[in-house]
Length: 338
Ligand SMILES: [Zn+2]
Image (cartoon, rainbow, N blue to C red):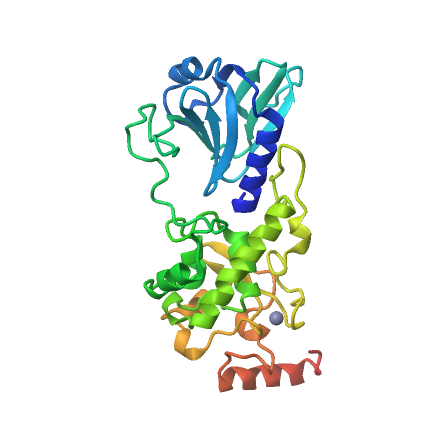
């Protein structure tokens, strides 16, 4: 699923490719993808609008149109925004299209069809409204801070963490806490900051919160520069990203940690694959929330590597004495393979 760096890339590509162009006609092919207004009002309202610019808020692409409108697009799982010559034949996954005056077309292609489009008014402060009425409430007001903006400071982040009870992984995925992160960059940021995904947020020391803050900012900056990670269906309007080649833990379960050589673990956490290095992201006893150990057990269907307890090696930080003894026995059994 596209996250901040991918959506930022889509917005920048579109701004460069179609900024200044005028929409001749707009057509919603699959009505269920459009949140607001109805398809006829959409077609009537968008025709003849000039594209003033394209930007991103959280994981939304915001296309600013003249006359005070914003076309909002959320790519969800498999959505793509592509710019093509009008003559290009659409396939059956195209859910909406905007014909431009210059013989090009912007297509919203979405295989799984979970993506979202909405045409709304621009409010006085520039933010999208919930409807075509600019006096309506802001559409994205429930989102947390943008991690690449100056308002995302260490002190704000540290005090936000202190006040939360959840575990780091779920908290960082929560768009109300911080905007734009998803499964890939949460796992990567936690690995960079050497923090366990199950550690409780409130237990972080100031130095650790600072480490996590700078890991998030550096990682996202790097990922935006690399045009995001082209994993699964993601591609930018102007081509693929390269960040997938630089990911340290995501989808590397069972492979050696790039920092310590330990084995990267993949477990299911809240139904999502979670990747971490048990050796350099230890979970001290005092930070284990109730049920942590159960959460670390992978399910049979998604099992890719050894179980958590088996992945512990003799030197594993965060392991109990019994777990270390078991790891030692296992090592002997395996003939010291590790
Ligand atoms: Zn490691």
